[in-house]
Image (tube, rainbow, N blue to C red; front, side, top):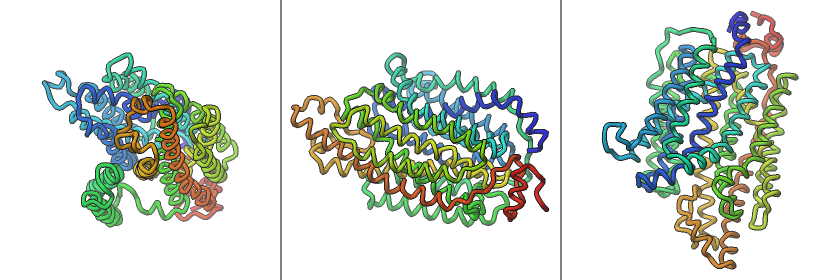
Length: 529
């Protein structure tokens, strides 16, 4: 972006940030609200054997579309592409709210319609998440991004806790359809604010979209998500279905790599991974998603079963996690803006996050709510050091023309890591639970708690219930102990990140620039030819 464009954009940055924060809130909040409403949806539509697809379809749509939205923004300008993703998300939300109703022209299979419309909604959400980060990268030079990305990370933390609370209120007081309709007025405000106040560079390249690469990447990602979702749950890990998906994923991704080497504008430029910082932060993002989303899935389960909290109160009990993540995200963002240094933060974050997982592995039947809250604060602090820093390093490692692709790749690796984590930790939990006294008290417990009969647990005699709760808390703490094996790798990888000076403008140094040339660009000087 030219200096003039940056100057023109600055007076509106706070207004634009308000619209971007609403958009990110919608993308992060939606899945958590819907999860709370799922029992009511199943009660109306039936289809208990397919209800997990309501979540999976959204995750699949988001993961598949993220790198594609990022590259489209690089090619055709981020404003039009981002506003399009907002519209797709809102259309998907409206259709989800109307699923199985007369508003769609007559009776139909409500669950099938809802699953299909959730995929549409997920496609839009992928554009929201990558678009927000890339637009901040367009408006704000790397040196100042930490502060604004820290605010976005804070919004993500709030969404993690607010989702179950809002979902519980809507489910208890309104129709489940409002879990989707609530997006419309909020999304409308974001659309209006961004359409009228956001001024980004307008550009368009003559290159064609890499449709073959996009198709192969979509097939590979879909196979991976289905493999991690079904493996150990719907099908055995060595079943023909899972092995077939594994083969399909490998073939599609290898073909994708070959295609990307030949096209002029690849969806995911493989040359980005030649940059050591970008390659390292991509692996760190994968591990962060693996441990964070995989293990955090079990905190509400522990609170509702072992600690006896209601679904709504379990959301409130996650406030310490949100508080730790929110405060540290904001402090770290300001520190990066002030000092221009960032290498220490992912190292410290990895160490603190590992400590948080170790503390959570101590959870048992006798752990009080104050003690577990302190453990969650430690985990939240570690996440706060990592969330926005990983995106900042990814964006600072590439030229401005690849900003969208880099943002999409960073979001993509975190999402894929989360998908793997949820699947693996679910299998670990289920196996440990089956081997304990708790196994016989449930009708086939899974990592999602889909087969758990909480009423049956309450009706057990006191001594038997104590044994069951002990087995249940042991299985959950075992998951956090396994998570340590992944979080402990994060600070080791972060140690090898090279502290490239954060640029004070969006003008990137030339390819192969020396450290002296990078430093000149960081100070806002013209790069040496």
